[in-house]
Amino acid sequence: MAIEPQRILKPSRPKGTYRLHDFIIQRTLGTGSFGRVHLVRSKHNLRFYAIKVLNKERIVKMKQVEHTNNEQHMLEHVQHPFIINLWGSFQDAGNLYMVMDFVPGGELFTLLRRSNRFPDPVAKFYAAEVALALNYLHTLDIVYRDLKPENILLNSDGHIKIADFGFAKLCMTTTWTLCGTPDYLAPEIVNQQRYNKSVDWYALGVLIFEMLSGLPPYHQGDPPNHLVLYERITRGPAYIKWPAAFSENATDLILKLMESDPSRRYGNLQHGAGDVFAHPWFREVDWEKLAAREITAPFLPRISGDGDASAFDQYPEDNAAAAYGLPASDVYGTVFPDFEYTNPL
Image (cartoon, rainbow, N blue to C red; front, side, top):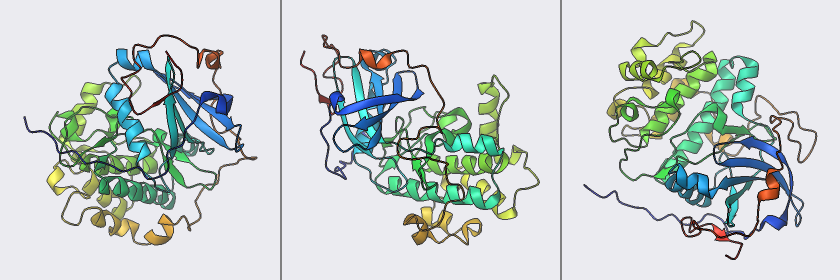
């Protein structure tokens, strides 16, 4: 088997050294299989951050060590206005900690569900910012692999921050891991074939469709039948039911992004992302102004001040923070080498 060439990324910002006692934990912003995300406030600069806390034993048992280390590695080496910042990471006997931006506007998913669907100019704004972020990642040979409205956060100024790099990976040529969100998987992933960074452009096509219609193109009922979903994905966009409200240009771009044959897919041709940026649907976008965040966002989150987390759901705290930082033996201390160690064994 050929070994995939590896690219060495250099850190994009100075690495901060943090400890749990540097922060005051305020509330839970979200929960997941391995832990939860907390809103915290620094005791030193009084700024608010989000700390992602992951239970090491659960990560190991669910065989997610590589994905977890990848997320830390990728975020440490990227810096872009539309991608969340990782300021530092550390571990103790029981948990991993990732100190990131607190993005107060909540998920694009929440705004989309509240709006039912977005008007064409609104969908275009968010799609254009996502396209800039994807192109940046691809220039670093990073494939993101988990684009969806839940992973796109809104900053206080209404611009996006892409979060959750758990499936991101260095990919100079091709890779083959089956991962991602079912509705957003490209056909080559479903068919368990080797694939390249163009799966992210396919996912952008799905995202544009979902923003304009309110649901992904191959959406299943609840509970979803993934076998039927995957069959529809492999049959291709010719079988999509198109809402009448879609503009001709929007439909054309979605078809070009969701092209089943990666060798004919927009973003993966000779001009790369240039074909996406030059498409008629994006004709009125000033890409330089957009990249500089000089275009006013279509929606400004209602935020009362720093640390306002009202855009996020309320979760039971369950006294979770009391279990952080407790001294204990640690059989997984060497499994996560790039997370600084803060507790002696």
